[in-house]
Amino acid sequence: MNKLAENESSGAYNCALCGSSDLRIFYEVENVPASCNHLWKKKDDALNCPKGDIKLALCRSCTFISNVAIEPEKNQYDNGYDNSLFYSAHFREFTKKLTSMLVEKYGLYKKNIVEIGGGKVDFLSSLRELGKNCVFRFNPFYPKFDSSNQEVNSPSSSISKSFPSVFEGEKIDFVFSYHELEHINNPKIFLKNLWMMLNKSGSLRVFFSVPNALKAFDEGDYSDIIYEHVSYFTIPSLHFLFSICRFEISSVQETRGEIFDSIHVDAIRKLTKTPNLTPVSELSIRQIDQIIQKFSAKTLENINKLGLQIIKLLGKGNRIVIWGAGARGVTFLNILKDQRIDYAVDINPHKHGMYVPGTGQKIVAPEFLIDYRPDFIILANPAYKKEIEQLMDSLGIVARYLLI
Ligand SMILES: [Zn+2]
Image (cartoon, rainbow, N blue to C red; front, side):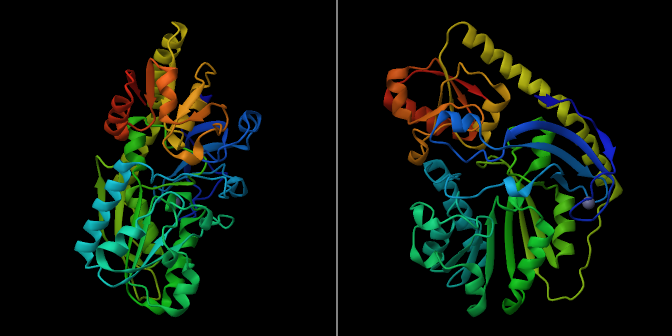
């Protein structure tokens, strides 16, 4: 399904951040589900879901990586889209930890805080509780998304007010966003607009967390490369992006051992008319270029290793399910394309009874496994292993685990 790296320079595209045409295409996958997190009520609809191509290109001027084959109109964030992570106690614990750190580090008490994004996480409730803050959600990516239907995602009325209307009347003190920037079609235009929208708020702090794409590329981890992710950020490209949009980065931190490997960006909105650009060094470009050139081959090796193991186990009559019908699980199923895996397990009750886009596995609750008795469980995200093991123990289910 995925081709070995072309690793060729293409003059056909321009970088969305710096405009350069010196892009190296290094990874291609055709015909993947356009929305990994849009689940389907009927198996046929799931199998025939809208699809698109992924063609990742590295800009050799600013190191920004993007899917140059993206057709933005295919990214449908409507009410059928559910990427909530909030059903996991492990994730809720993580939100508590991160928000406690933010409240303490930045003195977020009785402040006006905006969270950009929505649909998968809720850091706002915690920010409100911990610092008695007034919190708002700005959901620019989901024009068709009615958050009032998602009880987990809109836990209080005080966050249902839209950001532009908040902006008109209130001074904002802090802007927060967790794993949303990579979904935005053009992050430069978005951040420039954000700077403008915050005009009445003056200088303020913003905090963005994005997936650590380069770490994934270095490890040959393909599971987070999904159609919804338009952008993949490196630390130098983040510096470049924020500086061109008149934000000054105070610190960039690579996190390990969280739910997802991330880069946390802490920046200040600068009150300046002209951007003070942070150019990308030749050395950074060379180092990043070397990593991405090896990615396609490493990925193929990883896919073949686990894929062949699973095919062998299925051939011997083992029952195998995958745990996690989110982006990583759906991506893996669409790479493996083995119809002998009938079920995907998920703890999100809104997903139960639905079907996986592209490959059509039925999504079931963990309790389903009491009768089904799988021999092996593929873990879409190993970060949840402990939580899953505990749940399996409590249900009296004994299975072995395979890690993506
Ligand atoms: Zn560029």
